[in-house]
Amino acid sequence: MSDGTGTSNARGLTYRLRRADGGRESSQDVGKRHRILRSLRDELERYPCVVHARGVPEGRYAEIEAELEPTYFGRESTQASLRMTWQPNPRFPPGVSLDNRVRTDLTSNFTVHYHESSGFECGVHLEANPHVEGHLHYQARASPDVAYTYEEVRLDAGSPVGVLWEVLELLSDRLESH
Amino acid sequence: MTDSEEENEEPAYVSRWKAATTGFDRVRSVASSLEEPRTAGWIAAEAYVSEPTTRNHLNRLVDLGVLVTEERARGTTYYPDPVYTRINALQELVAENSEAELTTHATEIQADIAAWKEEYDVETPRALRASVAEEIDVEEAQERLDVAADWESAQYHLSLLRDAIDHYDTYTARPSASA
Image 1 (cartoon, each protein chain N blue to C red):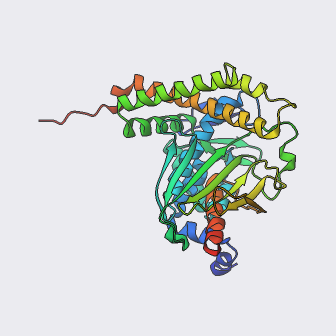
Image 2 (image 1 turned 120 degrees about the vertical axis):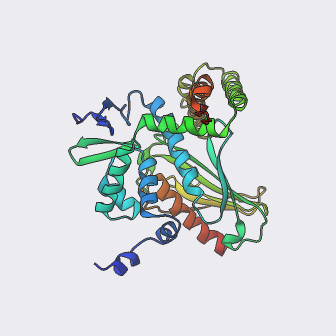
Image 3 (image 1 turned 90 degrees about the vertical axis):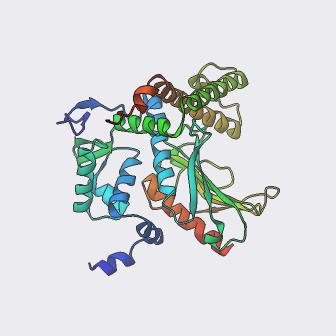
């Protein structure tokens, strides 16, 4: 049984988890980031049009890359991919903080970005951006040589995998209507 | 409230999620991606599974060593077992890579780290983070913070790869077939 500061596993062993909000958080956060990215990869492979998902660069797992079937969204492009990052407990540049964050209770940073062979790309990002208030936003552009347009969005999900499904629904709506 | 009324209140993404997964899948994936210890009620609400069923699934995952529990003022919380998490990552590495491929990945990570040291003229990700000051513009500051996070992640992966390489024969050993 835990004393309130430790945790118990199946064999009743009790040990201390490092604080999530300070102290030796960096070494814990990197393990947490890897665990979350692997969960997101597994979850992406359950999404109907995902052909394959993997951590990249191979062996380092900085983000998830997935190959998609664009016709699922009614798109005419022959190839599409999705890239996803997740950063728990992100550090912010001077003058930026979680106090600036609205339209979600999430404290992590993430990006979910769709690219297709036509050049069109779009994504939902939760990170500071000078073009949009409150960190959480949708951005899109028709090709790499034009500027992004930005739009505020809202998310209700609070877990990384819930966020993934909610964001994919949002992207699906935008892709089908684009 | 009837089941149909409950379903009508669900966000649109949940229908697609439910069509692709079982309730156990959703409880397990929500629990495996937790950012902090959470109660069964919180996980049930996120996974769109009833709380009693969620509690049963979570207790099975504790029995299997996937999750750990903690007694807190707000009730029992669940969180991924760090030992299981690391062993699971090692299992994946040795299942998907030969010993030579693991060595190649380790060499590539060491090269990435050497490149960051040279580009930013610092020896550690902590020093890179400390170099972010008011006089740097926000985009440059964010890039340095992102690289520092990637650098720490690369060090973590290097530790996993070294573990996998050092114990490759043990981790891949299989009992020989009997005559």
